[in-house]
Length: 317
Image (cartoon, rainbow, N blue to C red; front, top):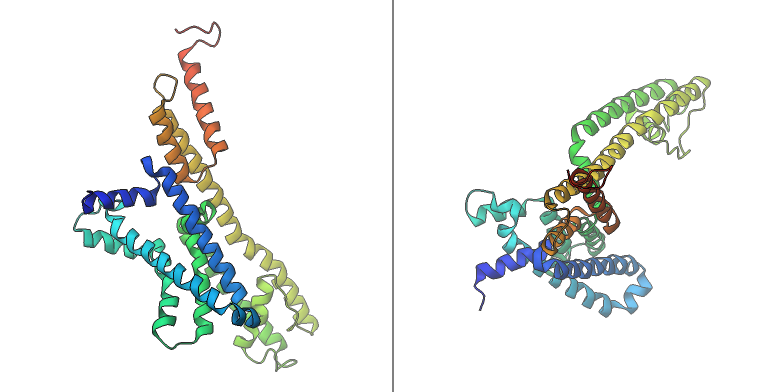
């Protein structure tokens, strides 16, 4: 019979989808993704009063089963996290390692996924508000989505640059609000009666949304509004460009990391079964497609062969 530590290590490998648990971990991920999607669809449909009333029992059973599964998953991940590679390096007790995991973004998302329903069952709170909070379960998909992981990493890497861009946008927002207030407040006191009221127009204009419910009517106000509209195009492009370039860089880094790993695994110009399994685990963790992985392996094998054999005579030097 397995002791608790052995079982915990197997559980960590299952959640990580590594080694012999690669296939089982992949199946578990697919099951959890399907459950999350079913919950999101159910929550959206449940907002229709007639449907919610007719299928109340079915929605309740799905909610109870989902919360139970998500709770078991959360507790299992919290218990097994001490055997994950990134937490074994933390010096100290297992309680300290679990605290690090508990405060990690993914663990907090898992906790948020079950808290609203637990609060619904335990406390007499506004059910409509809690039902909307249950939609936050969609963020659990970030654990399994390569695109979400890349986007979060892009936000993290470009955090300081994005803060600088948003600071510039905040300054421009205040200047635009003050300018339109000085120009239009005497003509339209109901719409531009104060700088905070003028901020609605400035925000809609700077984000290039332009709802049209508040517009300047004086010639000077229209000219000022045109200048702000032109300026807003550049303002919106700054954070968009930063995220796009960082997103592309994250993809390039993952591909390069995989190519380096392939290069290290190649010894005699071939890859054995164990090396193929190791690279497959790495491919899955990095979120690369099989086409990308096979291309990288083929490229590295060709480069390795070109160094071993003379490209003129085809013989070993």
